[in-house]
Each structure stands twice: as structure tokens, then as C-alpha cells.
Length: 475
Image 1 (cartoon, rainbow, N blue to C red):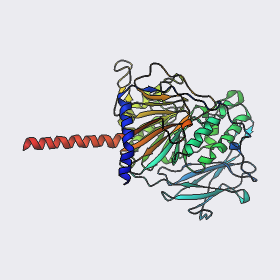
Image 2: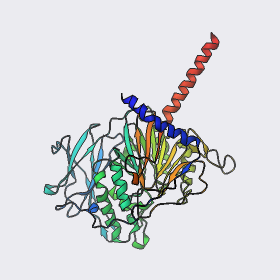
Image 3: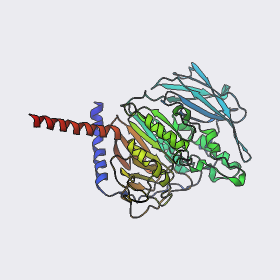
Image 4: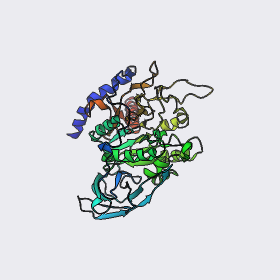
């Protein structure tokens, strides 16, 4: 019955996907800013500080190991360090287990951060709801999360994709619409708080407000982090010259589990997906640590266990918006051939404050002396999707290049979020949802065919037809 239901749902998406691949790309003329691109005032209820002495705030979780049966739980206290301890269990208010973590803090100009706690909770059962408690006494706070199913090729799972979020009213609309989507985890493609748009102590204050702003989602499901340019915070006029200082203190990643040497790039496996996070603002050319790590990680991918290979990066590889045009070209020149060789399914990026999806195209035939000068259709290539439309205070990037390049399938300058629902090893359903239309209206939708398994099915069919033909000749 479930299979028949999926086939019924699949039909309109297959039709839409077919149409999008035979017609020229679409540039939507819809542009709507429901609210001004200004940050919400600090006294707004979305930034409310939890009641009680030293109450934990800015609670967020991320995956804690390679395969998904661990989480890192983080929070901040301000009155005193308190305990870096999490109590947890499989029934509400019955905390059978506990885990101890570590505390850190930092300064930024004259701002002193709160006491930032990070606790690894591992050895969890798959596909299980856990309840957890942080803090002490009457100020303790309680939350829950669901672990993913065990790694497997046909395990269904639904991801949300958000980028360039910020803390405006448009950001709030994106967050609330995402929370209605039914997705189980967020793939975040960089640019979190936009605190770097402020100066002096206000930088740290706006990191704190953003942590409280997103807590209603981040405390209950893992957000898989990647860093953008607004996390760099290189501000010599304040004597702040350590890149990613605030981000790295606040948002840990399980980088050691994937043998990475830096929290800026890493990989995880979750349900039926292998997710690789790259850093646009760390060295990535040949022989650098990120280059060497990615070479090894791509060779570790086992498509028989995790068929879906997804890459997250902040700067788009392909982009037809005037904003940040060709900024991803250097990374494309280094990694595009690897993406095609290893049959990456989809690459999500942010940075450009608009939405855009590409056809399957590549530009690997070109070099400085010969070859095709323009991207060409390539069924072995990934789909490139830009979702830098979270709602931050810089506003929308409304100016696309004209005419629309052949590689661009759909583009629109509106706020929103995406979901990718993996159905099985061969098919996933993708939606881009414009904020203004709520959760039920997907403006751009298609069925994503798995690069590894779909090509293997085609090869098996061709081989079967060949062998049948040879038998007929022999007879």
C-alpha cells in the first residue's frame, strides 16, 4: 500500500521534472517582501531569556558521531558556570542516564560570552525518542529529540535545508514555515546570526539573541552546521582577527569522527544519506588539508549503505545571480571533476539571497588551452541548488543575469526553505517552499533520481538487453 501511495504521489512530480528538463529555464518574476529586512528588536518575545537563576539558554543539538547514534548538546549559562551535565532517558521525566561535557567561553572586543557547555551523548539507540534535561534545580529545562533510523539503503528520511537565516521577521517566517514541514533535521548552508553586521559588544549580544531565536527548533532536532562568510568576523578595528571565533566556540561539529583535521569541514552518515560539509573560506586547493580530506572521504562513501551523497557548501558552484557571480569558480575548478566521478546527487549552497536550481551540467571539458567554454548537459553531474533565502537583514538578491543561462532551471528572489524527502535508494522528492505560501505550496518541486543506483539500473537493463539479443542470435 505504501509503495502504491508513493507511485501515486510520484506521477505529478515526474511530469514536472520532465517538463523542466525539456523547456528553457524559468525566471520567476514573483518578488515579495512581507516585512522590512531589519533585525527584530531585542525586547521581542522571540529573544526572551528563560526564567530562573542561571537557566540554560540557546540550547541546540547536532549529530555527535559518524553514523547518527550520538548527539552533541550545547547551551549557555550566564550567572555562573553551573554543571556541564545532561540527564536523559527514553520516557518523559525519567532520566536513567547522564553525560558530562565541557565548558568554554571567550571574549570579543569587550564582550564576555556566557559559559558555553557542550556535552556528547553517545551510545544511543536508533529511531528512538529521548528526553533530556540541562541545568540545575528549579531552573533546569527539559527537551527531547528523535534519533535517526539505523544506516541503510532504503531508509526514508526528510531533511530541511536553510541558509543565510539571520534574525529578521522574514527569518522568523522561514523558521516557522520550516517547523511545519515535518522534516527531521536541518542541513544548514552557512551564515547564521549576521551578528557581524554589528559593532563592538553588540556582535556578541546578537549571537546570543540568535541562539535563543532558533532554540525552538535546534533544541529538538539536529542542525548540521556549515560556516559562511558572516561567521568569519575579521574585524581589525576591534583587534579581532581570529576567523570564526564566535562560531567555533558556540557551534561544535563531529569532525574527528570523519577523520577531519578541522571542524570547518567534516562528514556524517544519517539514515540513507552520506553528507559532506565543505568550507568555502578555508584553503581547498591541491595538497591542502581540506583537499586531502575530501579525496579520502569520497573514497570512503559506500553507496550500498548510504545511496544518497549530498554536499553542503556556502558559496554556490553555479549561480546566475549578479550577487556573488562566479565566486564559486575556484572551488568548481578544483572539485567538480570529483563530484561527477563520485556521482554526487545534489549540492546545496547559500550565500546568494535568492533561490536557484540548476540542470545536471558540468564544465569539466574546459581548460585554459582548449575544450568547451560553457557548461554542457551532463547526466553524471549533480544538481546544484542555492537556498540563501532564509531572510537576513541584507535583503533579497533580486537581480539575475539576463538572459538566463542554459544551466539554470528555475530561479526566484523570494524568502523560503527547502526539503529533501528520501523515499528509497533510487528516488527522493524535493520541494522549495516560498514563505508566503505556507507549508503546502511548493513553488519548485521535482523527483531527484539517485545518481549511483539509477545509473546502475540503466546499466543492468542494457546488459540484460544485450545478453537477450546475443541469445536470440545464437538460437
